[in-house]
Length: 310
Image (cartoon, rainbow, N blue to C red; front, side):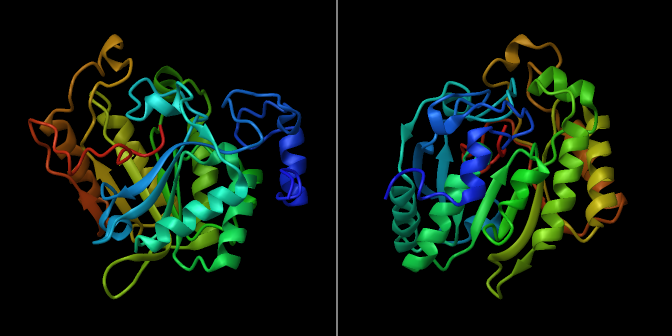
């Protein structure tokens, strides 16, 4: 089966003038042109593995079947995954082989298929998920995203994604421009959060506490930006209500080029994180996770993609 025939018609059309991410480069990826993300016609992955560093409903006891896709629509200066998200390391994989990866991971008894920084490969991923479901894929598909998503792209995921594991990074565009290179993150992520919630609803758990369907919203508290974090919680509450499942992360480290940026060139202080946790409780959130802020990095808390999709 040829590369083009493996895609749905709308997927082919999207790649012919690519608008998958908010950059809307409109390059013809079907003919080898590449835009901001660097993605081509074939998905490119850094690696796949059984991963235990996610929230409890995702990692559970058996781990999450995680595929790390190369490239990203953001350019976060503190990115934990910069080795492949921003330097473009990885290997091309065909859509049938990607479907086989899903099946191999399922054979490892993982709880779900976890797609990390997948935005720029949505048509290919959708085709691979459909193919894998025909082959017997029965576990949930998790879409692990920075929140910088276009409505058109998210529409292609309706019925494909079971769980959205979504970052809400900033409540100020001045901060998103300085730290992630985009000047419209707040409005884009707000709209994306609404669409995701409409598609999958609030998180639904099995009796064992494993996610079946729904949404988890992540927020990484960044040094010196408690006010932005409080604004993020207000945004989430206004869209999702206080029954949403929230993961408040304290694991910030000045990775990638963060050490070159004044104010975020240090670890998060416990008083900063505690202020955000107190506001989380004050406005009535009752579902979710907080982390103990430790002096040294804890490998159980600081996994390679616990932060999300930078």
